[in-house]
Length: 116
Image (cartoon, rainbow, N blue to C red; front, side, top):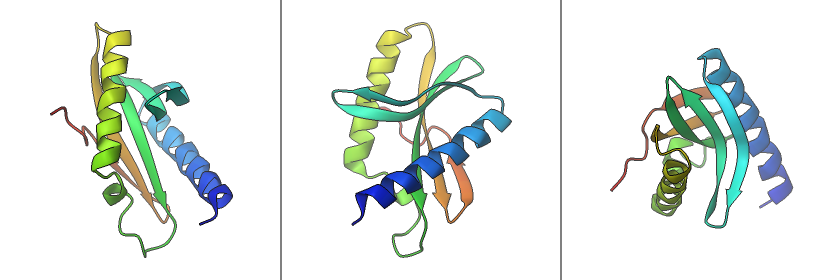
């Protein structure tokens, strides 16, 4: 596994996702925001809601859809990140979306990871 290639692919996917979100009138608040327990790919705001966006990019067809790559462990990290963002922005709703980029096609799953 070539981590340099994976990072480049991920960055390209995040750039596509940012452009897509901006087209939908989302405000981009930050990218690659690190916490001790995880990283937020894109933090955005849409109609008063803070949106944590997990971006998954797949170039080939051998791994299944990019959406399927947000497995249980990643979902748990995203929930922790959402709790952190809720503490930082107590007056706003927070949700977790996934933008899956499969061979250049964008799939946006709103509220993809819900609280347990």
